[in-house]
Image (cartoon, rainbow, N blue to C red; front, side):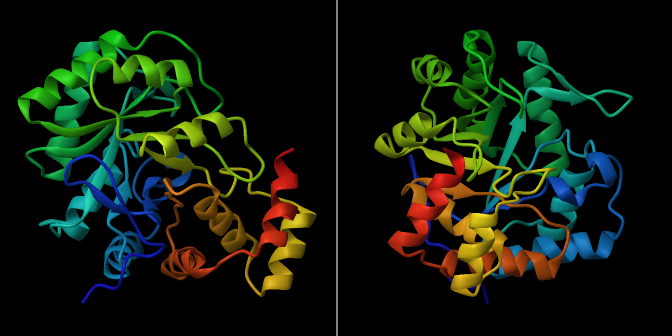
Length: 288
């Protein structure tokens, strides 16, 4: 029997309701997000535990592995629970050297959608995010041809909802002129606050803002202020950083990743942590 949604749920367009505390599956692949996991049984256990604990929002991409993570998701969870929503990304491919290269040709984007469908064992994808920037930053380049290609697949019924990843305010506006946008997935955490205006716009328009690298990414958050607040509240620094994001806006959703069941449980416990006003004020100072 599954538990209540951790951190509550968020209802977006149509029938799309997701847990605000999601799970990012990237770390299930091997080192460098390449190849199989070090411990396959543990990877499968993490996915099953996430769903058992109430997570209804799993973030993935076929370029994780590549292919490895989507195949693990299918092995662990297919046939999928009716309330589980898998959010995937297109717009990149991995080079032979493990590099992350853009892959934004409209025909290639359509091919990537079909690859996700095949590997996940689905007839339609719940949400597809178009990755237009990189984790290092966004740009204002036009995405009309690329987002238009995905909108065509949405009309065909292969995609239910569309979103953006590593996108700017300008690109969100352009995309909305083509098709509805239900999610924006950008780098955002206590120390990286450059998208404050985008967070606030998403809240105003009931768009899920999925903060990726909520704990800092490959360089974990390090802050004396964060550590001090965590010690005072009897929580870990990671839990406080996640709780801050959940309280940042009503439409913020989180996709922290881990390949450990114990760490997964620790992350999900952050959804029950309510930060007092004085703690939030201290934490807000970190990103200024």
